[in-house]
Image (cartoon, rainbow, N blue to C red):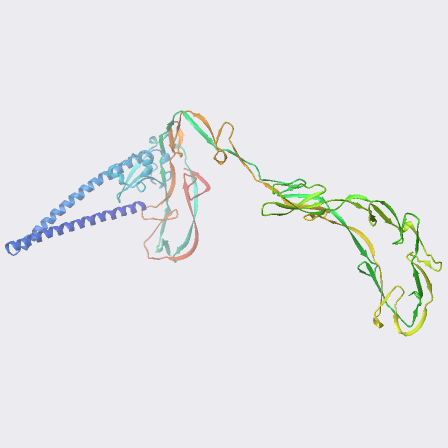
Length: 634
């Protein structure tokens, strides 16, 4: 066994170290004896002046040396006897305890070659072995152990091993033991389920060998034959701990629970006329409208301002028609005068020479009119009405708020296009008048815009000139002459919606104003469940109630389970590793042995490699291993 060989080697090194110390003690003793002899010889020379007898001195020296060796031998022998006594006693206690413990079949290995272990510390913790005394106290409880290996030859034969290390010295012993059916528990006929476990290991580098060589650690071993066998799994078992439970007598107890914490959600509020949406306040009103005029021109003309510009090609002539009176139009001399008016209804306006009727103006509220600014304290919230509204402007350094004030006033309003005079509206219309020419030599134009009469023009010879048709105005000279005419563009009234300042116009002609809502912070309330008393407040609130406890048994160790008046901690079996027969080496879960051959250093190649290891375990869960789903009964 590799572990035993290693521990035996450590023990051997320790013994050699003690022998070295003994040799040093011998040398120091011999030197002291030699000095004493030389001192006596020197004194003898000085006192008597006689020549020293060297043969006699050497004889005495060897006699003293033999005596020293004898004394040292006796001391070491006595110490070894004492050491042997507590070593042998402790090993015998461990052997007897293990033999009794492994009488229970469930504690023993199942398959041939399988091995289980239990440390000295585990045995003491389970009260299988009482506390060590004397020199045995120095024994290492973690490295000292007992093991039980199932022999491959017979079903009832096992190898019981004991390893003990104390004060740097170690000793191991092996015993053949037999457990027959009638010596075990009644349930020995039951089958045991084994679980197949696997694990993957990753190496950062690997060693490789040439053909004909087998990798052995970091070297390559040439071999003609390789023998393999399945490695024996080793399990470490901790025994069941069965101790007396503690008893808690009847009394009073205070039961504490956490208080009930209720938190009101964070909320927001808006002033009157506003609607809360998320964290904003929204106010919606109807849009106001203002009048605007749109002007259009006939095709072929260009809009300029409120007039339409028409342009035509001029014509040339060698004579010029002219009028001594009037204006030349379409080859005629036109003389115009203002028409006269008679009102068929209503009143006459002499200034405009037109007729109108009157009616009382309507009273309507105006659009929002700016009425100055007002200052209020921060706590004051001015309220809007249908005739007055307040708009936040800015905050002063002293905390006061400045608002813009808008008002609506009642105003006298006439129908579209009518003229207001005081509280009366004048409605002008051609339907209320009859136009005529005062002089019989004049006639009213077709559009009744003027009175005119025509006469023939006079002519005079001129150089070639460019003329424009009647109604067009001549611009430029010569070949650059242009004929243009302005006419009134068609006027169309349209209404344009608009909103007051800080309002936004929407696509459906609504005015919307958005302001930040006032935040109301959340509050936390602490209370207790019914039946509990509340003490303190806020985060220091404590909820408790006084209860009467009946006497009961309990386990001080939280890992133990209570069974009546006993506390039980079940024993565990943990996979520890694999064991190979003497002369074999372990590779994964396989033992191999090669014949003697050449041994060279392996080639080290860096990289990662994956290996998979498979074991059978009585425990389904073993740290570092994964259950494959396969099971078997043994």
